[in-house]
Length: 579
Ligand code: HEM
Image (tube, rainbow, N blue to C red; front, side):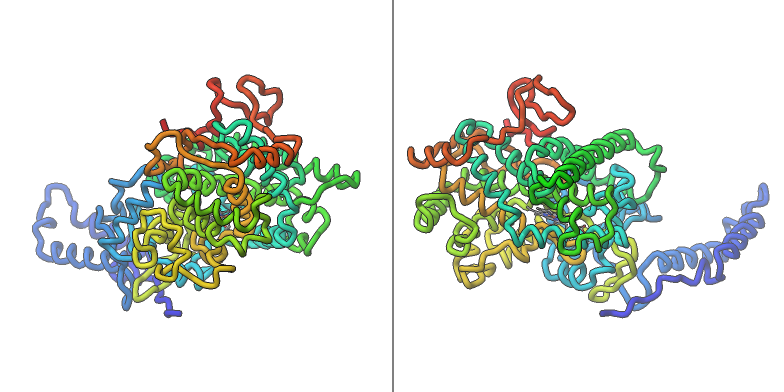
């Protein structure tokens, strides 16, 4: 690894300490600004000194000797940088910053109000920096809109690098490893049966059925009971929106910490969000504690903590932390996996030939029933379509920002401590060298040797394991196994069970929601069972369809989730349909 030069600069005019610099500057000004005396401004010495100061300042704010500054947009001096022209939502930002890579290369910087962010559009560079130099690139950004999340120990994706994040990450990996070995206790498959039946009975509400599916699966894994899905449905949107904020500008202001938190315009909403989340996670945890005491608890992540399965207590989470760690895993499962499921609907509506190919493959492998997880190795087309959905419309187009914890040098470029590192997943997934015709939905790029992204053998590849969409390094996503199980099982079953097509031709291109986790907006679809026999299998598959969203106006308790007046479900704005 390159040696890191010191950023300790010799001080103003090379005179040593800041105090001595300040007193020198004061005496110079006092001498010069005697009333009525303008000779100071006419003096050649003063002009010469001014130029020298400017040069020294430029050196002081420039990269250390032997390194160079990253290319990037020029802006205003004195650290103001370039604050105009910033896009207003993450999906648009991914495209905007992605386009700038054509001018500045795969890594460039953008400075705003003294904050430097670097933008990366190359998988190789992201691997080398975030992947290989883990700790140096492992911090997160403190956001004004979510005060407390960075320094607290409630929500791993936003936590500062340090002991809290390490303990939470350790616990997260323990619960994922243990439950993955048991296919997440069969909950995703149980929920597939219910989701098929809800879709059969209420196909127009397909987006609601998908979101319900993710919420119920996550709640079952977390607390052994899918009924807690409504809690998740309520607590996810406020935090997704707060972490997105409407404008990237806010993010830069955040980093300046211009306001104390109590003055933050977000503090009221944040206090409510925090309380709702705590109440939801505490209540669900308490129920598990009671059921375990009564000897009647189902498997769950909370039980892993309570019973110290796999050494879960080594992470030393107290009860509050464990409630939030489990809740965070459930939160992320719902918030993220709903996105590729919506993308799947957009993709096959635009490319019906891929639904046909999927159905042919599934009919060949398992004509009588939806594919089981053990059959996934025989279903490369299914895996290819899912992987292409993740590439085509990344769920997190800009990932989650990292922040550097120390100065670094990459390829001769200086990267200072505190730099915000934005991996542009959208741009990476559109690298034309790796993904020719990048804007097109082409699952064959994972299936045919003529495409650069192809890998053999077909029993293992394509796979979501190691997919760049899940991030890099120390802060990489711990939820890959669960994502695979959830997407493979549900999409496999949808393909087996239904014909799906858009009601109108105008679904291209998919219009994404404007949040940090972005998904195609729902649109009207026609969903019909592929045969009478399949209809019967779906009907007989389960008794309880697992409806969790109530008709409008029927809210009886705090955690009830209801449809809008017009009968639609917009998930607090996260799934507003395209009109
Ligand atoms: C479509 C599925 C998913 C995608 C695309 C996705 C993507 C990501 C990305 C890009 C990051 C940031 C990585 C980085 O900073 O480099 C992340 C972090 C994270 N993900 Fe996922 N994720 C998905 C599903 C899940 C699931 C099912 C879970 C459930 C456990 C989960 C839990 C987390 C957590 C806890 C973090 C924060 C890790 C940390 O900061 O240390 N994700 N995910």
